[in-house]
Amino acid sequence: MAHTYVLEQVDIFEDLTSGQLDLISELCAEQNYDQGEVIFEENTPSREFFIIAEGDVDIQIDPDTIGDGTDSYQPATIATLRRGQSFGEATIVDPALRSASAKCSAETCRLLVIDRDAFLALLESDYQMGYVVMRNFAADLSLKLRQTNLQVRESLL
Image (cartoon, rainbow, N blue to C red):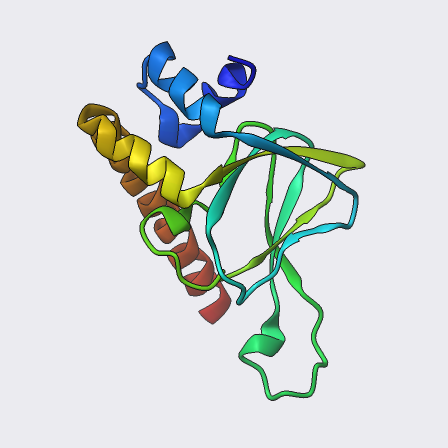
């Protein structure tokens, strides 16, 4: 399938077979963004997640969402993601509001977009694939939590 090569690079899809990656590829829609264009904003509903096929994406938080309401802060980039990385995947287990914004930081970005409901239906139709994806997702989430804890400790010291 057209997107399988990119999907092979995604951590949450590690250890899936080529046939399973082909099934995920069928769910992918492509979206293109130009530099500075917002992909999604913090505190908006989440119904899909993204994989970077080309370009770089900045993940940003807006301190004003927890500030004093004076709108005096600029969004802060907390991570820059590159080809083969996923973002917004927390929607797989929690379709709550987005906890950060995402913005194209390269000249152009080509993203693969996967709808949450379609993805969950696929995982439910193949429990082995569902187990592998959720195991990988848990490991990825654990790593991100550890990194965040270290950043909090550093900012407090």
